[in-house]
Length: 115
Image (spheres, rainbow, N blue to C red):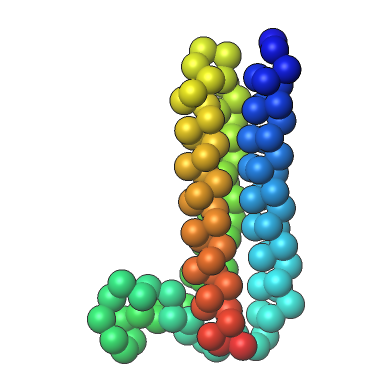
């Protein structure tokens, strides 16, 4: 393995690790502000105005472990594929990172609106 391939591998795993760490920190943040959250949280912004945008706060909290699970599954898949096709593995890791960053942006937007 060349040094360039080694650097790419370290960088991509470091970025996925950072994203997963940020998800864990978001979970800690959610635990700290759990009692301040109202019973229903505005999570579904694509729906029309009103009550249809609201979900129970437990559903809002359950999206966090789902995001962690998706990130970990994609990381395992990318590690298995890496030996056969490096490009596909990097694409999976990049897509996972993008997905997690988008989730975190929406998560912190909702939390900042509420608290």
